[in-house]
Length: 453
Image (cartoon, rainbow, N blue to C red; front, side):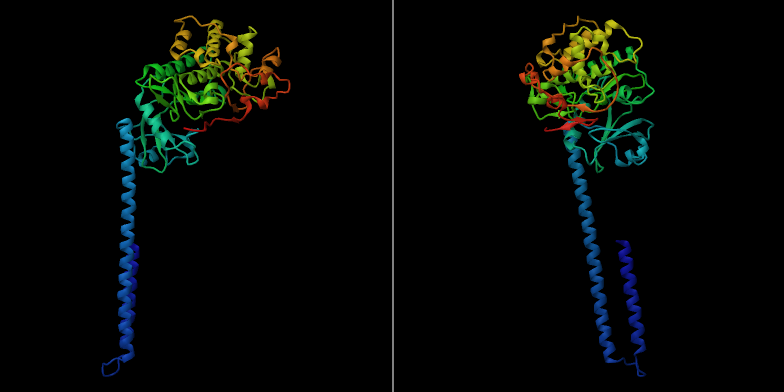
């Protein structure tokens, strides 16, 4: 605006000077100007006046437009802040400038990973704290609702096995969450990725107990009942001492003690969805229990729940685990990289994982009981082999080879949706192929799916 004003004044001064010189040149010897020149002078003055008025009008309009846009943006931020405060009180709110400086302008070199929400950056605040900044991607299927849910949930709970939220930022184009930084990254990177970490048996066992304690707190010990809805290896982070912390609460749901379940759209990650939730949208804590069982089996076997690089009858980890248990070969499930392990602990953990993945949610133990069984406070309940998830195909159990190959290959994951009844008769027909199994409907690598709210 200032530049436009200067140019306008310069232009007016230039025209005035030219007009003066032209008028002087046409003056006659008697000091009287030509009548035509006088008329041109009057016309020029009129043009100057009009030009000045137009420039002032434009400048005034631009000033008013800028003030209006600024006021609207400020009002929007105030409304969002009030909405945020009404939900979670007054969390620490960082300015966009602080976060931008901490992450070196969101440099690609500071990216720790990417998820369904968006990229996560490593940053250093002015007070020296190292943090993880979670940025909502423009292409993410999650949005403001999930942003508010995550802040509301993590602000209401505090536990050593839950990631700590330092604050948030809402005055940027995309919402930002500021978490504590966990040095060892995610559990899936530690188990499936190329890393220098070599998780021995004791570490894996303690990680499973830590995850179970975090879920037990969410389900039974916190001030509100919370279902995470997206328990998976990539949503478990490890600190410097390899203690697990559950993260990513964007899909979490709260519900009252008087409610048996929530009817909701399916959201989560393929491969970890409980049958009753995937097929009917019945959400309860037992959906998290099922997902924990799958994660525990992944930790034990050192492979993903679906591995397309293996033989047809070995692709699905859950099916392999149930078959090995029924064949009294439970310990064959263990990761071949585990040179030393406690056989009694390994058998106990596998049995608990199978109890957590039973087809009927009523038969799955609550997470508090899971913790007690793992820590030997109570006896492990016998696994009822008739209660295996109905989506474990009969053809897979019949054709399972006598030797079990454990490996780490493709990062593909599969759907675990199924009805909670016993296996249907259609699964016993001779013409069944793997594409007809609910487990093989589709695959994804690390992101979540969102089919409803």
